[in-house]
Image (cartoon, rainbow, N blue to C red; front, side, top):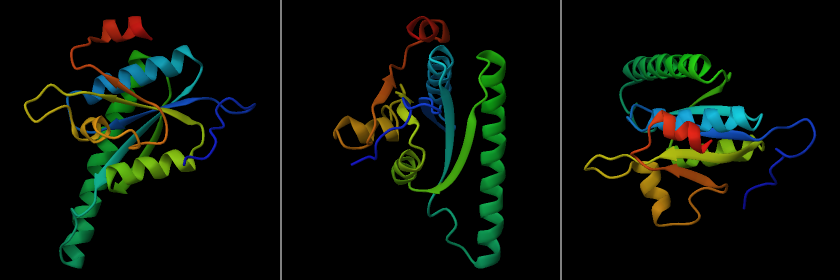
Length: 163
């Protein structure tokens, strides 16, 4: 059970959340979430999740690997945020977390009660629509808020028309 969303209360605004990763479909999800945020006077939360289990090495090596992963996350997020600022005119909130993607997304949704919609984009590769989209495809309880899944064939112009 998700706690009550505060986005419609005075002093709050509805936030759209997009997960940032290195998949081609990620940019479509961010574009849609950013446009919806701008058109509804809402906010955009971009979250990057460093996968758990990547740092099971000796302590010194683990610290170096963790620092490198954080540096990569910060670089990817800075690039994505700059694109959103330039193309949409929205200042995104940037969140970098470490752990299981589904668990971290759920935790962030619970902590930030203004987040009202999670935006994902389906991939078109032979591996399937992507791990998060695949996770929600068979279960209605994957995330405690509505999830918008964009088809893999929409252009930015088509996304703008939908927003």
